[in-house]
Length: 237
Ligand SMILES: [Zn+2]
Image 1 (spheres, helix red, strand yellow):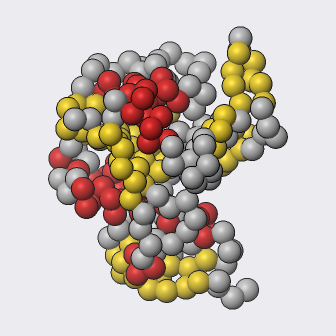
Image 2 (tube, rainbow, N blue to C red; image 1 turned 90 degrees about the vertical axis):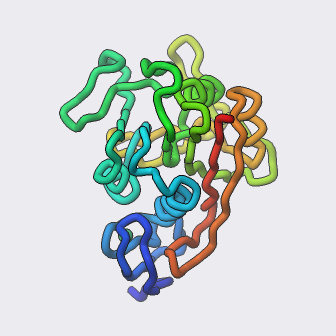
C-alpha cells in the first residue's frame, strides 16, 4: 500500500534527520517517524518544550502516564531529575515500581508543594474523572515560574467542553456512548471522560490559577501535521 504521506525532515523527539510517513489518513496516530516511531503530537510537544524551556534537561520534571517511546523516552534518558508516574488504584500511593514509576493519582498526589519545574502529560487530561482537582494538584506541585506542558485532543474546538462520564459512589455513569483510547498499561484502554474544547483554558484558570496559552504548529519538515495538534502550556506565575 502506498503511503498517504512520506517526507524527510527533522524529528525533535529523536534528534535525527528522518523519514516521516503514514499509510492511514488519520495522521494523528499514524504519521510516524520511521526512526523513533513517535507520532505528531509527541513531536509538537517536544518542539514546544525545547522552544520555551531550552534548559529542560536541567529541570525537575514530573510526567504522568508516560508512553513507551518518543517524547517520554527522550525526557527519561536526558533529564537529570525526571519522575514518571502511573496510577495503579489497588497499590499504595507513593509506591515506586521496578520501572522507576511512582504510583500517583493525578487528582490527589503525594508530592510536596512546589516540587517540579515542569509537569508533562500526553493525552491524559481527557481521561481524568475530576479534572478540576487534577489541574489544581498540578498547580500545587509546580514551582513558581513552572509550567504544565501537555497535549489533549480539543475535539470540541470552539464549542463548549462536554463531560462524557462521571463517577458516583464507585460507579461510572455514562452520559454518552463510551469511547476508549489506547493505554500502554491497560488492555481495556482509557475511557474518554471529557471532550474538551478551547474553553479548557478558562477551566484551568478557574480551577488552578494557571495561565494557559495554546501553540498550534503545522510544519511537515518537522513531521508536525495532524488534527488536534495543539500543545497547551499552563504557567504558574
Ligand atoms: Zn524520531
